[in-house]
Length: 263
Image 1 (cartoon, helix red, strand yellow):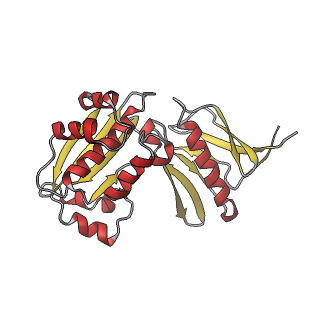
Image 2 (cartoon, helix red, strand yellow; image 1 turned 180 degrees about the vertical axis):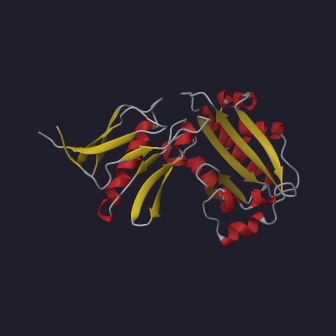
Image 3 (cartoon, one colour; image 1 turned 90 degrees about the vertical axis):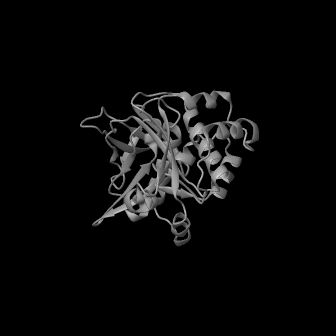
């Protein structure tokens, strides 16, 4: 049976779904003046890509209306070359300096107002970003949803380890926010598969590690589902916890997390 609702992190809020159900986007800053052609990128992906995750199935997405690949130049949008100032995240001094010499960037975006269980677009976006980075000697790749900068070396290393590039760990993160005396944990990145992010509110200092562990486990499980399940059981630190999600109201649903006691 369910016992002991843990008030320290019991209220979990799924934030309102944005108008666009699915959004995933990378910015590849170019280190050369010339923008690589799509033909060159496609050829590299199919014939020279050192990572095996990209196939003809992913290549078909080049013509998908949900995919947009556009070029942004510095002289028309200077602010885009300091994404940390308006998107968020943190850039090191070296990363900021490297962007000073970049005159253009390529935006690679997948956006859909309809849900889809086909996650090929996650593989597509990461491999295409890598291809543009290789051709342009890119100084930086920026994940706009996570507000996360990648060096090209880190990005290629990630693809070498995870050629499919669709696992939850690569596309989500957990951030902690402090508002006065209140501490909350929020997931970031669930919008990449069309789900709202999770917020765990009122987390006490002694519950932070457990809360983060529960959220990471919940992300992995929900990541495999087409929609938010009504209930979810998560294992953490030798115990089993139950997430219960009532019907959504006003764009979000509050859930309670309870420890399941063995009988």
